[in-house]
Image 1 (cartoon, rainbow, N blue to C red):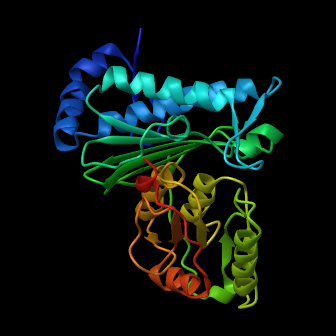
Image 2 (spheres, rainbow, N blue to C red; image 1 turned 135 degrees about the horizontal axis):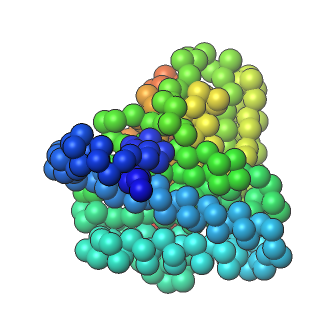
Length: 311
């Protein structure tokens, strides 16, 4: 019989009971928890994200019933709700004093106020439209914030089976491999990621396309969109893209991947070029301040109501 230990990089390590007892794993685990009180929470988030990913992959093999939220392009499914309920109920049982902000809970009328209390910010399916169409970029995103600061993030791209993790001060990883943002400082050689968004107001669409036009005219190498904010941000963390920007998204789209970006050496800014605010519904995530501010220079801001003003 063997014991299974979850590593900080999201992998499971099999250890014999004797080695577990005599090599000091138990003592080391206790010491690690004292030095880093949130590591156990991160380990649990990885387990839950993998479990949620399994539910999503299974659902992709069946008929998907689709419902509409704020617009015909803002979709929700029974699987979104099922996964969020599973994640939140599991965490509540283990950490009853913690707070929660979940996409579907907010859609159902729950508040989205961020306090100093340890808070789990959850997007059960980031990329619901992709999920509905079986476009293979769908993520479970779990962010963990204490005193309004991001402590760790877990993003599981479940169709690709890629587990992205970031822990404050300890780096960012994908399937155990350390992540590092690109070193590209020249925007004319940069690849950007963004989204067209779900808002179908003609003036909003006009501004979104105008922003893309200005960036393409610099020119940049290109602009890509995979349909999920969390994976877009993780692509910046891997160095596959150089910067990501978007307006109209929510804290649950950004909380998981935000710290993965910064732990991979990148930066988060507001689209104005000022400090990033998790509840502002807008972001530039880039490999550097230089590139982030250059992107900000081209963006016309779309005013959205803050997440913490919708309670």
